[in-house]
Length: 74
Image (cartoon, rainbow, N blue to C red; front, side, top):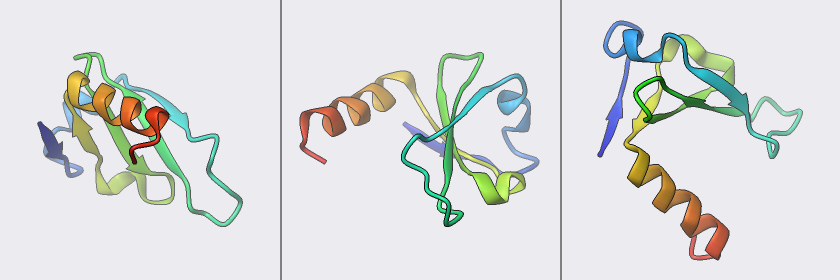
């Protein structure tokens, strides 16, 4: 399940998130951050527009995404 948050919706879930900038982010402002939420879910947001909100993924969906990238299927 994926949920898109806005600055007002889901903001409480984003509080306390541990954010990490992607190591693949370049210097051209094409950066994304992943946040591990206290609920165990994962969030992804645009580094240059953090106030816009984030996409929030259940842990299983996020792990499937990571596995697909590591396995070369994405």
